[in-house]
Every structure is written in structure tokens, then in C-alpha cells.
Length: 280
Image 1: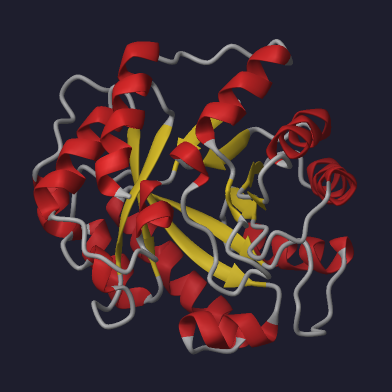
Image 2 (image 1 turned 180 degrees about the vertical axis):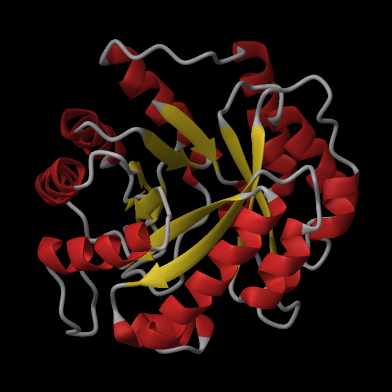
């Protein structure tokens, strides 16, 4: 199981600006914990996400010589992908593609058809630059807008992505609507249909829900899971403020109880938890 830490997701909705040097301190601490990947920043319009306007500066301050953790940056369009692809330190570029037409337009100001065309262009940029594209299927467990949703529809999206050569796909529980049952149903359906794809789980949960959701991910055979320390972050369109990212420390504990050992440096993890108090 690959554990992806998502400080970018956790920070992007904060109303106060986290100073660049504090971001760098926090991320450098996270780089020592032993995560497979760090979703560290994004190349998007500063008007859309002012918190992450310093991603290039932050990247320049990261100490990567003593870590095996890889870097992932989120983009919302081709221009952002071209910016991210210019940095040799970044291995993964992430793009949110929504199963919900309404959310796709709200999130990236594009229709689903336009977003698929953008994915094709971004995939070409990634291939040319030696990067790997990670596509997040937003509203991957249903949506509050009444737009069509089913595991079969998620499968149709996956088919189109596979045809583009994309091999890492992460259904995302954007508003916390998933249940352990729906997690198992969706991932078992996808994993059976697309055995060559590395599927990830980007889930949101209310307090007390993470353990059951992580166990469902394990039962379904998912290969990667996203979290954020203390469960910070989440989608502002969720039903309530208590819905956040899966707390990384709870993911680690649950995976351990399932017999899945991760290469976690506990001292670095505790330090990161302390530094996070200043960030958030």
C-alpha cells in the first residue's frame, strides 16, 4: 500500500496565508516521515487558490537529497501542467476530472468533454517530460447535484483514461458521501475490470469514520491511499465543516492493525504533527 500525504489539500482552503518559510519547514519534515508521495502544491491561478501562489518558491526550498518520497503537484489546466512539468523534482502531475458535470464546471470552469480533451493534452506533456499523470475522479462516490452516477459510469470514465495511456486513477470522495460498502463496491468493480491500473483512494470522512473506510479500502485491494495529518482540509462543498481528509495518523494505525506495515519514521511523524499546529 502506498501512502500519499496531501498537505496541499489540507492547506489550500485556509483563510490565513501560511508563510512560505513555514510551508517549507513543514514539508521538509513530512519528507522525512517515509510517505510514498507528497502532494505538496499546485500550479493554478493565484486568484483561484491564493494559498498556493508560492508553490515554486516552496519547491525551491525542499530538501530532497535524503528522502525517497516523490513529489506530486496538482494542476487544473494545460498551462499549469506545462509549468509543473518544467521542474525535474516533480515526478507526478495530478488533474481532477469529475464524474459530475456540475462539479467539473464549478471546479475547473470546463465541461466534462472539455476536461477530457485537456487530460489528453496534459498526458502528452507528461510523457514528453517524463512525468506520470494521476487523474482524480472527483465525485467518485456520488454527488449532491442529482447528476448521473454509478460504478458503471466510473468504469466508462476509466476506460477512456486507459485509452489515453493513464495508469494511475484515484476515485475521490469529494463531499464525504462514501460508505464502507460503496467503497468496496466501486473499487472491486474497477480493479477487476482494469487489472493494469493502479487505483488510489482519496476519501473524506467525518470524525470516527476513517477506520471503517480504510478497512474497506484494504478489503477492496486498493494500492494507494491519500491522507492529511490530523484530517485537515476537505472540500468546501461538503455537507458540514467536520468532513475532512482521512487523518494520516489514523490510516497508519488502521493499516498496521490489518498487517500492513509502512516504512514510517515515528520521530519524524511526531515532529510533523507538532509543526502542523503552527501551520493550521
